[in-house]
Length: 591
Image (cartoon, rainbow, N blue to C red; front, side, top):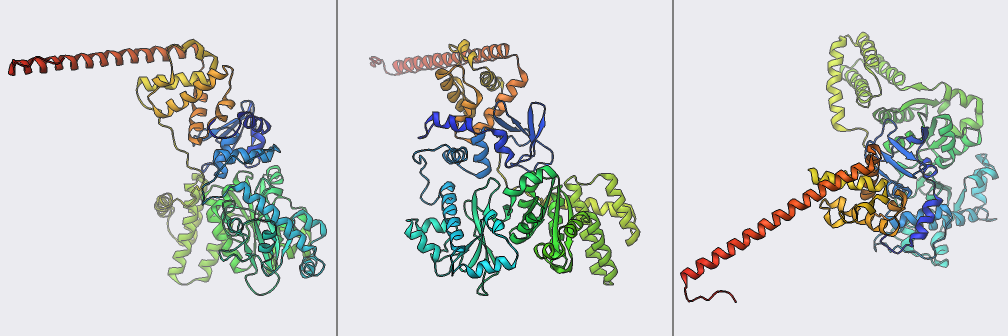
């Protein structure tokens, strides 16, 4: 392996990290034969395309081509380089690495360092909350909202003092201002981002603190703010409480989404442990993509005021585009879930969830309300077009079948006077427009397909690797015929160099050890694909002999062509010399 990590340490980390457990922290996996399957997080997956092999400790997506070991999964999902992935999994496994072997670029920061800074800041904020005088107002607010000591401890709630408290504390602990800026704790002007606010740590799905949310204790600024986007945190791709809710979400196959931190915390207090929050922002495609990994159904809970209904309508379009089973529920009396739970209790809140409506019931009610209220032809036309847009979005994502489409078209025909044929014609046009705009874009990793070359010689090179990745010991039988220098397809030559070097050191190597030595995600994807293809073909000995025969044939032809070329060049040189002598008889030739 290139780099400063000891192979023995890397192997220890790899062996201490079960791939099914690791991927299960991000994706809901179900058993299928000897493998496990789930929705691939690296592309817009609608049916389980990701296969995890617990025996070989590898993963492979048969739709987008992603594949590799535990290191490659973390590299791709968290956008880390190879040394960062090693440190990340070492920390997860509790394996100490004595020194940092990774030197980042001057304008970058190691995500693991940001996590350590956030952990320090969270402890500092929690200590502030217990201050006899300065913490009194915050403790009173939390008590008024009926958050118990157990709630405060469970959610690690803290307090940011005013007057650059975190900046001074960091200076005492010799933490640089530059690092605090990159962690989102200081502004560009080197002042505290959070002042006089109750602090809510924000975790990722694996339980790392990646950011903070904050609630103002005075009227000097916005009521709620979050950390700015950092190397760890992007608000539109993060859900508060998912680290605590994911197991219940998987078990119940459903996720409940609320808006704020306190809503989420109070829901958990009352036993609704599959609740997450969107950090006070609109529901995004990022949120939908994350939840779809764990849940078959998503229930969005909104306030029943106009703003809440409009927010629900926007969220539905996102979920329709992602082919997600979505339902809507509204909290009455224009209360948020936290206040409603405290005033009405668990049973009434459960009724709200059970009475949630499906997407097209909500859309149909919006349409009929709009047509009843609006005598204006333009407004009525806009309402119909919005309903057609929703159907088209669902059709494009495969969320409704032709029978459901026909029923909706007939239903619409009865209230607007157009024939079902006219409505379906308009729907076809709208579907084309939707498919061109790509409503549900995948912002995940781009998986590039390896170029394995064309022609018989390239196919033979590929077949050699397919066999040896499955049966490394067979390399000994072809060591006099095959060597990496013979490979002329770049990606195959790279793999051959790695593979032959490892086999020379350890003829009993396995796929895990091979992947462990590869830093490139793209190369790992190619290796997993070649190994799988070879395993599917089987008949390793015969396949290898066939491939070697083609390689040797190609090499023989190549030598003959080179000899012909050399012979032609020699004849040409003789001819030039002969002509030169005829033109100049005094020339005695070349000595």
